[in-house]
Length: 164
Image (cartoon, rainbow, N blue to C red):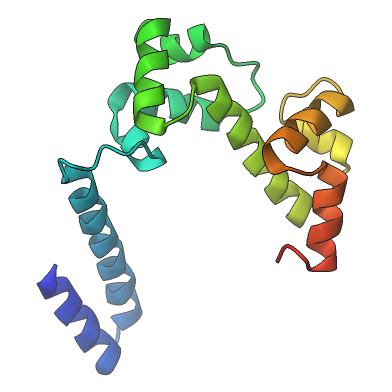
C-alpha cells in the first residue's frame, strides 16, 4: 500500500504522459486493498453491504436483485438464485447484510426510485411501474415507509434544493 501511495504522489507531483491512467489505476488498486483489509478484520462482524457481497451465496442473491429489481421476488426465488435453501438464505442474508432479503429488495427499489425522481422527468407512476409496483398507491406507500416522505414530496424537495 505504501508503494502505491508513493507512486501516486510521484505521478501527481510530476505528471508525464499517461499519468492520468496511472493515477486512476493506482486509485483502484488502493481501493481494493482497503476493502480487502476491511473484510479481513476478524473483529469486523457488523453487517454491511460489503460483507454481504463478499459472501458467495448472499452476493449471488444481491446480484440477482440488482439485475432485475422489478421482479416480484420471493425468498424462495432468491434462495434458488443463491443455490441454498430459503431458511439458509434468510439467516445468512440477515447476518451479512443486516436486513432480511425482501427488506433489501424494497430498500434497493427505493434507492433506484429516489435516483429516478432526482434525475428523470418520468412520471411517478411510471417510475413505480418500472420498479415492479402494480399501483401508484403501493409504490407511494412503500416509498414513504422507507424514505419518510411521498415520492412527490421527495421530488419537490429535491428540485427545490432542500435535499441537495
